[in-house]
Amino acid sequence: MEFRYLGNSGFKISEITFGNWLTHGSQVENDVATQCVRAALDAGISTFDTADVYANTAAETVLGQALKDERRESVEIFTKVFGPTGPKGKNDLGLSRKHIMESINGSLRRLQTDYVDLYQAHRYDFETPLEETMQAFADIVRQGKALYIGVSEWTADQLREGHKLSRELGFQLISNQPQYSMLWRVIEADVVPASEELGVSQIVWSPMAQGVLSGKYLPGQPAPEGSRATDEKGGAKMIQRWMRDDVLAGVQELKPIAQEAGLSMPQLAVAWVLQNPNVASAIVGASRPEQIADSVGAAGVKLEAEVLKRIDDAIGGLAERDPAQTKSPATREA
Image 1 (tube, rainbow, N blue to C red):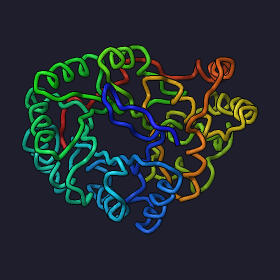
Image 2 (image 1 turned 90 degrees about the vertical axis):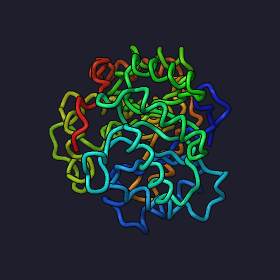
Image 3 (image 1 turned 45 degrees about the vertical axis):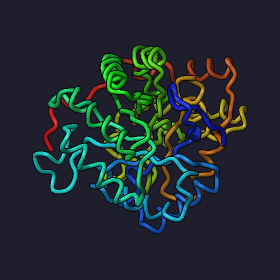
Image 4 (image 1 turned 180 degrees about the vertical axis):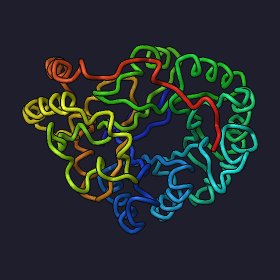
């Protein structure tokens, strides 16, 4: 496993982060989820990402249970706040001071830890003054409940505003967690340049485009039984945008590229996002322990310029690149 600094800080995380969105507390049984966490640790992954909204807090509980016997200083635990939790009442969501301060306490309790390494604003909250949100984060850092602060899916302008306020309040915004893959490149035009300017790293989710870049979906054929595209609880709606024959045919052109590089298709997809120097880590999930070893094979891989060009020739024209696709909900209604 390789490790990278997160933002303009001395904090290192593993190039591969284990994330438990869609799986822990919902898609797989708790004992299998724990086996996946153990497999991640055995493979050298030290960084774990979750959120209070995943499975309405159950994912945090499962991760906390799985990590409870680990030396706390040897792992990095990330969680997030914004989405509706609990009974989903009027103050059970968003980035108000009330919700943030209550949510960090709930997350720490479920994760069975005194602090999280990174606490992230899961989206931008248009209904709460940014000053209020950043002041709450500053207080959480001073209380020692979070060591670092990050965000997720913020635009370049939102990052600049948040970063400026964080500096004024005596802490630093060091990360952003956007979607990023060969097929979803919306951060490249604005978010990445702004982040490089500010000293903010990307921790990217869905590097395999919800599994499409695994190559298991074939043009003109039904999705394999038991795959994500057939699982309503496992992201079937999200994956539909890529279930077009032109996209699936383009992905098939990646197979010889991966083979010649000595990589599996998932490894090629994860390695591709890690070629971006602004990316600190790629988040991968697993519903079975054996899936972890394959993902970890992407760590430390260097893709030559010729390989990157062949990838672009195959599917670059099919990728979504519109910066306007980086967005948060206009309202925070549960």
